[in-house]
Amino acid sequence: STVKSGFNEMNVKLDQTHKMLSEMQTELANVSRGVSNILKDCHAPKLMCIIPADSSVKDWINLSALVGKKVEVIFICPVTLSIPRDGNNKPMGYSMEMPHDWVRKYGPALKISYEILRIGFAVGRFAGLPLPNLSSAGSSTNVMNVLNDNLVDYIGKEAPDLEELAGVLGDRVTLALPEADENLSKHEDIRTKINASYEEVMNIAKRNEDEDYMKTGLSKVVCDGHVEYVLDKAEIKSIYQQMGPSCLGLPQAELQARGADLGVVMKEGYLEKEIGFKWEMRYVILRKGGVLTHYESKEEWLGDLFGVMGKPKPKIVAVNEGRTGKSFKLTYEGGKCQSFKSTVSVVDTKAEIKNWVEKAEAHL
Image 1 (spheres, one colour):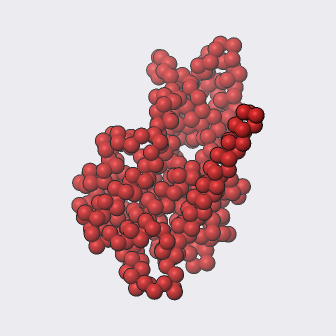
Image 2 (image 1 turned 120 degrees about the horizontal axis):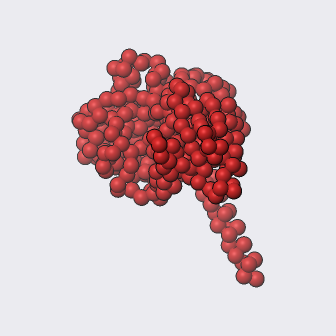
Image 3 (image 1 turned 90 degrees about the vertical axis):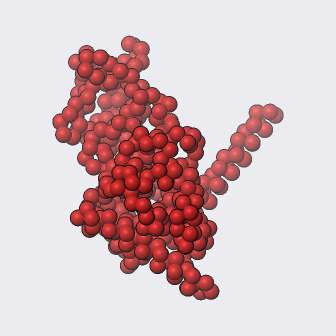
């Protein structure tokens, strides 16, 4: 029958999707662990991203546009593929002016990072990078693919002697650097250039008087001789200390089963936010752990490729009923408060407010 045929076709597509995701998850794990092998003795965070400090910068995805501008150097936890945040829900890291020779200094380290993040983004593991708005990439674009391609082009123009390195990393077949490889000498040269790039990354921390990387929100852990900098949370450090590099590239479900808090969205929807003496519509995202972000519209949220381009707030510490009984008030760490009310019909308002309050209180 037509219905049965439709179900069969849907099942085939689901099977194909699951197979593709499984293959990409395996690739993510292999590349992550290969990088860990290359940088086994590197005492610096492995995954980084450089973005302009001014999020309104147009076409920032053209990397040459960053030279001479103030940028933010942000590091990513290799276990959770998430961005560490401070008490105000702001990304942690360093500020600096982008040097003219940045591609030679940081190009190899960025290439390593982009290669992993590109795959992580594709399998839905990667969320939380505070990238500025894009004017040259659509909402369905894997931004890491674009950044990766642009970086390779830029390396070819500005540092052609590093072009071979970009090609090898792009192929992702020599990351493990097997001892039996007949071209080991070439790979050793590549290894040397990669480690030299991470030495420059370490210099950023030294200039910020932060040789332990405390300002990045990451913490050093060691397992079987491998050094990693992971999210400074007890459960994440415990996962790495127990599993070592084998925990890199694990699926979300397995990480959550081991106790990792991945900032899961608990509730989202339109609410009216109190601003002065008036109420304005906002699309609100409430994540596990009491982290709230709001957007001008749902379209802005859907167009936010990395999930946190909205207005972030500190962790919620209290939830109270609002003045009208049709609203609720959130108190954040630091003492600031904010009131919201439901946009649904009057009949459903109290039930909707109760649902938001229960979700917000769940983490307290």
